[in-house]
Image 1 (cartoon, rainbow, N blue to C red):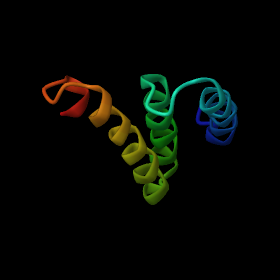
Image 2 (spheres, rainbow, N blue to C red):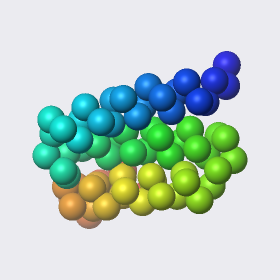
Image 3 (cartoon, one colour):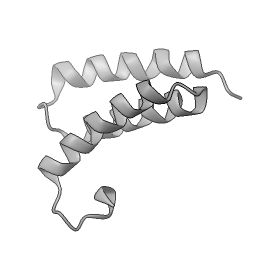
Length: 72
């Protein structure tokens, strides 16, 4: 448990595939950005975590209704 570098490696591979195959505001990209942010948060790299959480939020703000629970 706690192999964050391995998790980031796999999330990065996933993200590269998604960025090539999905539209830029696809919800799956938001999920991947959020997951990467969670890994950085667990590693204590809060500035990097914030960067990825903000990317996820921007997509969700564009694609979800304002009262959606993911925007709370």
